[in-house]
Length: 293
Ligand code: NAD
Ligand code: FES
Image (cartoon, protein in one colour):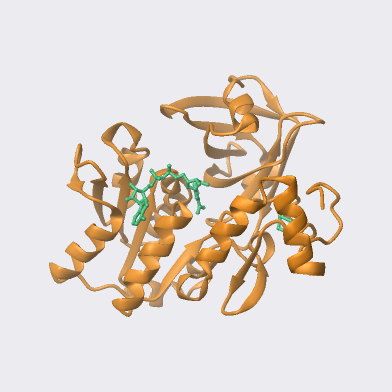
């Protein structure tokens, strides 16, 4: 069992939890994720790792209560436990594998949309701890929905906050702030964008025009998280990839976002999953037995 040692509501329906998971805390890297399950019958819920404390043996997760599974999770309190806390899953961020001297020369821009601030945070923190100051744009619909601002401020080179309705910070979506920064003379070598799929699509359309290489972290529907079920299938550079084992990070300019978004909608229903099975054949389903196909 994996005990919750801290629970905090960051804003309406978005929660942060520290969970005792020593083995995961010991080996996880920025960019990786876990799959949690409350009990034997519980839904398997993939969550990006927001932070970790190797000494305390805790992993921090942030989640938005949207479906039945996450609503039940929101009902857990400090002292309660998860039955399963599987991870670390997926590949670590490419940044943590780079030569540090070369990385320190790089001008890095992170773009975090909404709950996407949670997976961006450990990467920016890791860079900060290794002497790399990255610029960070954090966008939310309104001031009330903004999360992790103070935490991000402590580790970012420059932090640019923007709200869609202009209620705090700059006004407009994250893409507007990218345009503004470039117009102000800022230059970047790489952009890492994490947030809702639609945001990542439009960030990539813009950065393609700006000739700015861009990495995205995809979070399609996942079931097993081990490359078996096919739920998280995406097309990157015309090739079939599985976000859980080949990603979650990919070259944003090569991702077929329209297909990924369409697939995400279709996977929600039994009929949609049956159509996908017909369309995708073997690559749809490797035998987990959970997706209903
Ligand atoms: P949101 O809808 O509030 O959007 C966040 C920000 O993204 C907006 O403030 C805006 O600046 C930007 N954005 C949205 N649409 C845009 C567009 N068309 N063009 C340019 N910018 C745009 O975000 P939310 O409610 O926090 O999003 C929740 C979604 O994010 C869920 O679907 C969740 O699965 C996903 N998510 C993804 C990751 C990931 O790893 N990629 C992590 C956490 C959550
Ligand atoms: Fe990736 Fe099943 S969740 S293949």
